[in-house]
Structure formats: C-alpha cells, structure tokens
Length: 382
Image (tube, rainbow, N blue to C red; front, top):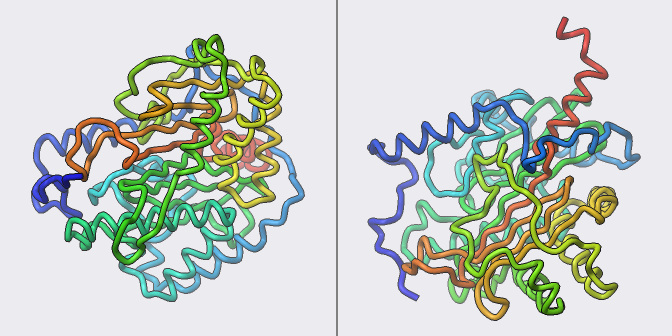
C-alpha cells in the first residue's frame, strides 16, 4: 500500500504553527478546560456507581516503582516529570505525532536506566497482556518510521511519561503515558485503580519488516468482535446494527471527556448463553489490560451492570467495521480507520483505533477522587 508523501507528515516540533494548527490547539485547550462531567447519555449523569472502598489488593509494588522512578531523576527532570493530582494536563492526551500539548518527560530523552524505571511503573500497573500490547504498539510506531525513513519523529520512545500526585505519602496518585497511538491514564485512590481513558491504536497493525518484524496487534479484539456479531441471528444483527457505514472516528477519543452518547444496539439480555460468553470474552480483552487482580475487581463491577450493557455494530464482518460495548460503567470502542500515514482515504484493517472509557464521571478516577476529598480533606477546603 502506498505511503503518503513525507511532506504530509507533521513534524515533531513545528518551527511555525499555522493559523489552522493554532485553532486546533486552542480548541483542544478549551475542551480540556471545560468542567469535567464525563461521558454520559442524554439522561445525564448517573451517580453512585463507583463507591470509594477498600479492595484488599496490594498496590505497594507499583507505588514503590513510582517512588524509585522519581528518586532517580535529576532536580530539573523532576520539575518536569510530576504534576498535582488536579492538573489539567491529565486531559491533554492526544493520539497524534505533533509535539504540542505534550508534557512530562519524553522517554526518548531519558537515560536508559531512568527509562527502564518509568517502564517498570507501567509494567507493575498492567497485566502481561496489557503491557505487551502497549510495548508492541510503541514498536509499531518505529515500524512506520522505518517505512517512511522518519525515525526521528516516529519511533518506539517518542512517548511522554508523567506522574501525578505523591505516591511517596500514600495519597492518591497516578501516571500517564502519552504519544502516537498510545495514551494511557492510570489512577490509584487507595487500593482502587482506574485505567481510563485508554486510547490504543496502530498503523500498521503488522510489522512485515524492520527491527520488530513479526509484531502483530489487535487480532483478538478484531476476531472476537467479529465472532460475536456473526454469532447473532438475523433478528439480533438487526438490533445490533447501528449503521452500514463506519463513523468518521471513535466517538469518545481525545478531548471528548464530556461526550454525550446514548445506548444503542443489542442488549446483552438478548444474547444466548454461548453468545454471552463471547461478549464476556470481548469485554475481558479491554478490562484485562489492567494487572490481573485489579482486572478481576473491575470485571465484577462491569458484569454487575450486564443487564444495562449494549453491543453496537457498524460495517461488514467480512470487511471493515466498528463496534462498541457500552454500559453505565464501561465504554469500549473499536474501529478500522482510513489511512493517515498510508495513502488510503478509506478504512482498512491496516489501521485500527480503540478507546476505553469509564462513563458517568469515572475517567481519571475523578469520582473516586471527589469522594476521597470529601471523606478525608473536607476541612482543608474550609
């Protein structure tokens, strides 16, 4: 497949910001500055879904990994590496190669030992499956750089890592990994963990040559989603199908923290036993990016709302398609995309985007943080 000409690829640090680019930057800043509500339906915010509680899970390992990373940084690096828990930069993540709105420390600029300590924080937070997927996507970023001869702006380490809060004092804290096709937000409030918003994508999804030849991503998300739709009866497919055409992009990507999206498609209650198992397996791929113990707690939370969960589909199972899983406590989207670095203006299976959200105020652990503040710091605000 033909690659787009190099002149169409944005530079890492544009020397000149055009009026059109400046308008995009300004719009994104305004969107991030909006008071946070979260992804909701037209019925509005549903409260009481995420009680502050103790799970009994051990989070000391990941906390110590964060402390170890911060302790390794020089004073100047430390000043750039960490932010207050309520800093607006949480909401500045974006899938793209451009440098603007990036924050924290770029992994490419870190000494290898310090970069390894940053990766240790991520590894301790994710499952083996989740961590491998993130690293594979970073590797595929280099694959595209190799294809285009642009490794300086498309490579495996051009990702920004930020730490929020103070893991040293036992309070709420978190981290963010942000860059092209990899945007992960992770928050710890006590021993509860929130791993959304998480945007993961790839173009290409297979490395056919280069340093990481043989790397393949999203095959399970693609295949199990397809299997679920094709397992449906004609009547069920009629309910699940929301459009013959794919949407132009994911509904709840970057800078859509307050997006309004109603339930659509086939309720899980209409699934047969075998169909339900496929649907649960599909949910598990997205929930299972978190470390195993936290994923277990999260899956219980998700399945507690199974009766209010919907599967929606667009496109053709034998070709390109979009699907989403949507309930009051989870929203996962998958879509085959048109080319950006490849010169095709139509969706193909070579370019995939996914996003996972925690609706109704759960993203970035914000509802948990609100409850934590009310319970433990009410006097501080008086």
